[in-house]
Amino acid sequence: MTGGVYYGVLHHGFLFLDDGRYVEQNPRVLSGLSWPGVLWALKSTDLSNWHPLTWLSHMLDTELFGPEAAGRHAVNLLLHVLNTVVLFWVLQRMTGALWRSGFVAALFALHPCHVESVAWISARKDVLSTFFWLVTIGLYAEHASKPGSARYLAALLTFALALMAKPMGVTLPLLLLLLDYWPLGRLQLESVRSWARALIEKIPFFALSLLSSIVTIYAPLQSGALRSLESFSLGDRIGNALTSYASYIGKTLWPWPLAIFYPHRGTAPLLTVAAAAMLLLVLSGVVIRWRQRHPYLLVGWLWYLVTLLPVIGLLQVGAQAMADRYTYVPLIGLFLAVTWGVADLARLRHGSERLLVTLAAGVLAVCSILTWHQLGLWQDTATLFMHAARVTERNDFAYVVLGRHFQQQRDSDQAIHYFSEAIRANPENASAWTDLGNIYRRQGETSEAARHYRKALRADAHFYRAHHVLGSLLREQGDLDAAIQHYRRALESLPSHLPSHTDLGIALVRRGSYAEAIREFRTVLRLNPDANAHYNLGNALLISGDAPAAMPLLEQAVRLNPDHPMARQQLQKARRRALLR
Image (cartoon, rainbow, N blue to C red; front, side, top):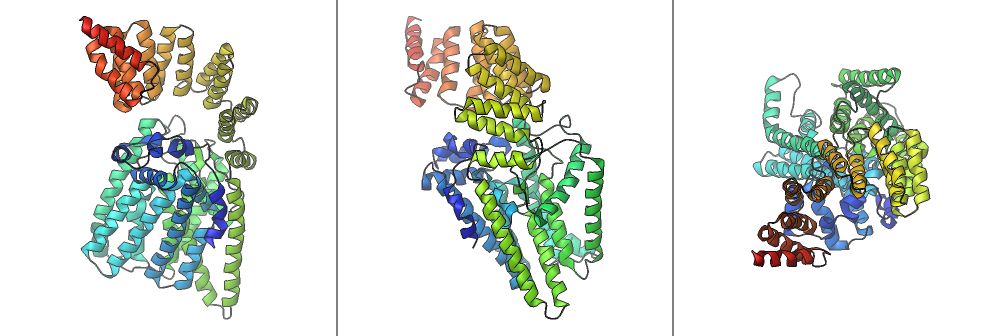
């Protein structure tokens, strides 16, 4: 049934948002599996994440299906189906409740909130990490029933693989403690000895979570994706976390409409935050009070709260308030609590079994219809983001993506329209001002372009892209000192921005500051040793008078790219100068 509902995804293509960087235009991925690729995946923190297993899965897709999208969508769908099967096996193995476990697995398979994780190629990390995450729980449950080092070590291994696909699984050790309480019955809440034994057993799992957390925080710090308190205060983050917890519950019960992006509006209305906090407190009080008679309520509720914690926005990455893909694992807890609770309630009423079956069938039918409809919105970038702009308020992010999409399609009029809509929705959107300036620059309207770049910097004085493009415009106009200043401001905001390092080096060469230029080009070569990096450093050394040092770099540039327009010419010049010496 899951395959039938999701079948349409096999005809979808790539999306503009992230699919290009993950797959469609990523030379590492499109090169397929190789030892250099494996080493890169293990070291890379590209796209603000360390997830080598996800990168390797995309490379394997290239080996199996080539550069096309259909096979990649099929793998996402296959992993979702496997996750459904493994979830059913794990729940049935731990609880012995066949039909309840089956219904939870069916809800997981068909709930509309999970479309984003399945239909988006860039969300491969969700379905892949969840597979290993669920297998870890299954292996741990086997170890709990028949303790043995082999099962325990296997569970540690699969947990490590889950973290290498997506670090959101860092909360699994806490979840294992919950499962020790119910349904495994290995933890007595009032027993210190029981707690001590359970915690000691989880130390290796906590150690893996700690390592993953350190890397996870480091990666967005390097890329500039981790938002500082200047962007969203601690109070804003807490308010957004509380309202998001409540909103996810609402979307679980009524998953319409859904959007790929929900804008973060900073300070939420106090009344909204208070209502969300009250809802969470009331539900928490109920499950704690009923924990002895209905322990599954406590486990399901804490499953939801704990597994959402890494992405609830206390450490803000990106500009979204929440995301449907974040619910892929957490909603299992709500499904479990509600399913077991309704089933227990039905047992108290004689003859209610038929009504319960009818209700379950109706819920799954509605979920299937909504999921099928939601899946249709993911057919292309324009459909998906136009829908997001319609169903959310002042969604400047959606308008920016639409503008870039139409810019890529060479439809400048539509691109200008959507960038302008983004600015109307949020005049402080530095990205929209910059992108609009880029269009005017390509059209030859350099003064208009510079005006938009400066408006971007008035909106955000630290926006590295605006500094970079304004620097490039000034360099083209011959104002090297001003260009160099903007490149350096860009690198203050994002030290790893290779285009700024490269263009700063080029400007420094033109100004005659060869030693500084060589330092910049060495930085680029260390971070990305491609043909251009070798050429730029070799050329700077040649111009500075060091032809012998330039020659091996220019030779490597030619080896890496035999068609490089300038490398052969400069290599011949370096050889002549070396002979003259």
